[in-house]
Image (cartoon, rainbow, N blue to C red; front, side, top):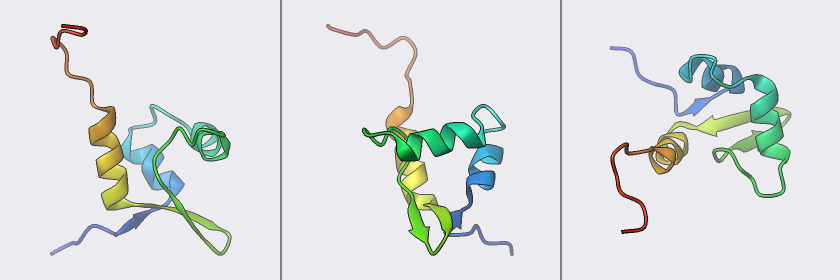
Length: 71
């Protein structure tokens, strides 16, 4: 049985999102003052995205079509 890794590399995040964002976008999100992107950790020189945190961030970014705004 194959288990999912607890941490994803930036390359794996790009693949997870099917190339809809690129490595430069992830890098910009990490450097942005408002920390726009998903949570990440730095271990030595490596940037890693905790899978659980990434899943929570994706859920928070989910758009529900048909939801009425402002009512």
